Length: 157
Image (cartoon, rainbow, N blue to C red; front, side):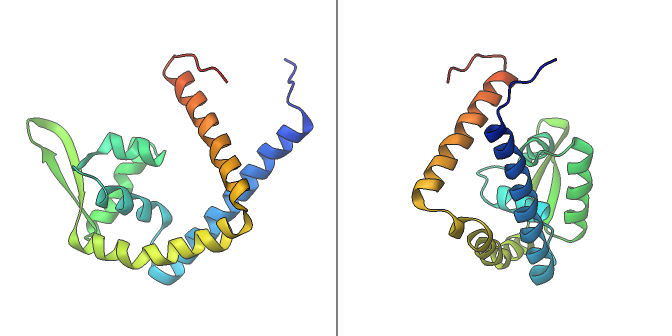
């Protein structure tokens, strides 16, 4: 099978992967060092605290790009730390819903400034407004196209 990715696009892909891995590692290290909080735990607390209703386990796993078993292990850890709680869903004995606890909300509030400072330091300060606009547009286009492909619809460019 022959591939027709030109050198510039392939380098953009490789640089995207490298930049993503590097920035995520830095953000993870900063949260761990300053707040003792893993980046995935931060993401769970952020999603749950902003939710209008409790999340189901499968919704959380999908939003974090984790397997169901990986999400379950993470939630079990956060529950032991008192940051989230799980309850049976009303009317669905098999369903579990997850909510952030007051302790989880306090932990999140303490971590947000560290995380936002890290995003500024390692990502946004290196982009002009025009570059940020172009990146946002490109990433939206990619996400829309892949979501459409995943759901079996066609997406035009």
